[in-house]
Structures are given as C-alpha cells and as structure tokens.
Image (tube, rainbow, N blue to C red; front, side, top):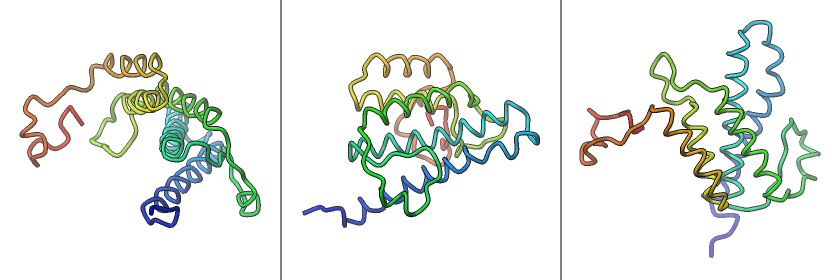
Length: 172
C-alpha cells in the first residue's frame, strides 16, 4: 500500500534533490570567489559540495535505482523533461565525487565543526555505497583508507556511548 504519495518517500525525494541542486549551484558559482580564497579553501568548498551531491545521489540510487541525473543548474522546463539515467552511469559520478572529496577535505577541522564533511566521511560513505552495489574491492579499499587515517576508534564502553558526557567521542 506504499506509493510515491507516501510522505516519507516524497520527503526523501524532494530533500535529496534540493541538496543536489544546491551543491550544483555552489560548484557552478564557485569561480566567483576564486580570487578571494586560497586554492586549498577553494578545493575544500568544491569538495564539500561534491560530497553532498554524491551522498544524495547514492541515497537516491539505493532507494530508486535509475533516477533523474544532472550536474548543472536546471530551469523548470528542462527539469520537467528530464528522464531517468541508468544507475551505473550515476554510480561512476558518485565514486568520482567521493574521491575528489577524500582528496581535498581535511581529516579534521581546527574547531569542533561536526556538521562538516571530512576525508574520513568521504571514504566511509564511498565504502558503504560500494557495498550496496557489490563493488567489494572498492568498498574494502575505501574502508582501509578511512582506517589508515587513524582518526576514528570504537568507544570502549558501548553502554556509555549515548550519554551526554560521551557525546562526539572518537567513534563519531
């Protein structure tokens, strides 16, 4: 009895495409600040946008398979005529975006900015997505790269993990 009118499905679809549209807008307009930021910051901002786009497309293809796919700004008329793209084509762009993100994102930020993507997040998301599509060697390599960062560890006591005193431990 679940259909596309189900609010959970509709909200997922709408919000994921909002994220993709916003990421594409950032990527397309980033050149406007190129003279105002360092090359490293410029690449970091692009990497953050590409991480969001890859994460959104990975969720969409996991849930729906072939979906509408675009990497640039779309006007309303074009968007209504956009068909579905084979998920394997989208998958290659997802891997490329996660790779770019892993290359240009920091391992951690100077301040406690937990809502920002990191190199480890890019590797972790790529690994999870590769598992969804049975790209086991790619999943292994991305997970190994994340572990090699030596940035994350399991919290020693699972019973304490969700207390306010252990919030944002090295596991998160």
